[in-house]
Image (cartoon, rainbow, N blue to C red):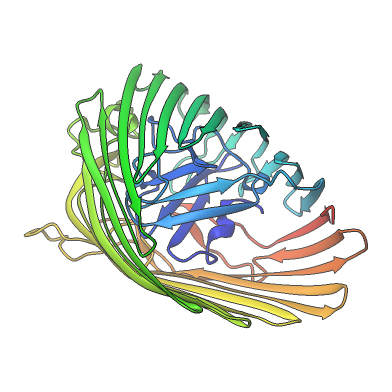
Length: 515
């Protein structure tokens, strides 16, 4: 996996942007929501910072074996303010045999990943689209001892950053790091969890202006869960933030969640309060029915998001400015869908509709300074489709997401217009064909619709589609050789305004699976 962009076109409702050089900014959006509306977790432990609602470190997704994605607010298992959904990255199993892979790209990037018994290690040389160079490493370790499970993940990265095409070139370097550790103890119907973490980001720019920003964050948390006739979980988390930009802040957050599952019905209600005098409730009710190979479900939910420290307090530096008058968001929605699976075919279909009040997002003002504001009312509605089939020699799957997110602020010129940076549709298709007993070919396509870059729909990024092809030669004892050609048509596209996507590149991967 070259990055989180591998999710594009593979999972309905999910779109990813990676841009900004060898130290990329990664934005993961679910159902048109802002990236800070997505709670990100590792094995159920939140890794996001109260500073900006994103992980502080840059983790290599290749150290994980799979990912769970919950779409919609008040997502089951969500541990933070994930009003658009939640992503849970799963470490290797304790039965994982030793395996490793080495990849070399024509851009000069090199990736190495190894896994063994619940642990993983990654080392990368990253290259930006404008030639910047960076290095990163990720270490993941998990274990168990009787009724106790524990784990930790650490990352460190450094590299050059790149400016958008519409501004002056910059000479900048960013360093980032994060560590998160956790312990889970089970005793009869009770569970107790501890977690602690720390992270930093240092940014130094010499031209065209001098910028020297340093940010650090620390966190601790404890939660207690009781599995009785209902499941009750209460938690207390503390965050300490130090920044040369926003000054120092601390935040204490308390949560209580009650969940009841009866087989056909699942309901939950939660309450959150913090030291900034914010208090909000969330809730979700799901009805489901299984009929042989057909699974049907429907859900209604309500959830919230509070402004981050950067949203509120980012100083006016000529490029960006916080907004201390921001209001809390509130999202309420519903979904209805079905899934089916048999020996050859599988698929899913889901429709959703979400209303958000006081939605927070960043855009440049009339003077070009980026600042957050509330959209008093917005609507996100759409349809998610996935289908696939499997035979003895081929495995194919495809997805399509239609998502219309509109500004519904009454009596304004923006009423009914699409929100910026929300693609109208995304899609993907891949097929894996076994040509010979030891040779297979994979063809993958993914695309994204037009995205407007302002609130008046006068400027936009064009739609695009990409094609990747790879040939895999299977040898004995779990040894594979993969020759890939990404963006084979050398399509020009933009990840975000002024940042082009990756051009055509060759990739050669040697893999040992341990099988």
